[in-house]
Image (tube, rainbow, N blue to C red; front, side):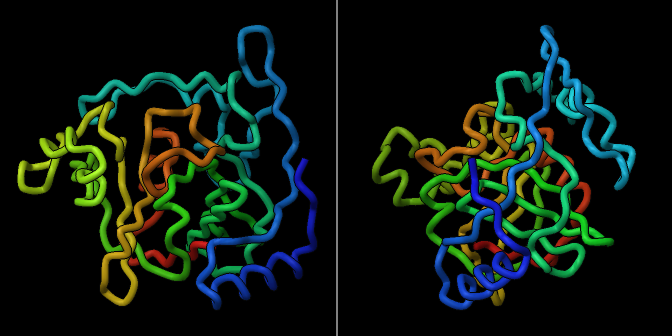
Length: 236
């Protein structure tokens, strides 16, 4: 169980962390556990006071076709329900429209009006801990191509077939960037930090072996549709 903190302490911790460029952060209060029935259907519905996309978790994480790709349903009954998309009281104090990535507690917040935020669960890879600070979404990609960096290819030579020189890995369900990717730049320079989708729903809320910040594909599609290019991002 995470320790709760005051809003003031959370904001103070975020300010100090961003200034120091460290990937640490304060604790965030737990959300209520979502109970499910014997068939895995949630008995508690997500809050619906932001927009009609918050109907039920069964709908939010259902199977769907997206640009010719068939996304499978997410077995939400197997997940820690705190990592499902939900509306919470904003703990960040950032301006509406800002994305805040909490690499410690594995949450991504999209700050909204009226003191609220949409919270998404994320998984963090070692690259996800390697950078912190403020950046902007330089561009977004719909079903992106994946090109592993040179240092990854050096460790895993079998990935050379997906190098930039060879055209990368084509989009699809097995592509590590998933259904959408947001590319973060700082002062016009690529941070090599990505917010992206993943079919590996079981990795949400965990520190995984590689990659930046991953969301469930259904969640990254939702986030992608809500934010424009040049959206401000704070990684703590």
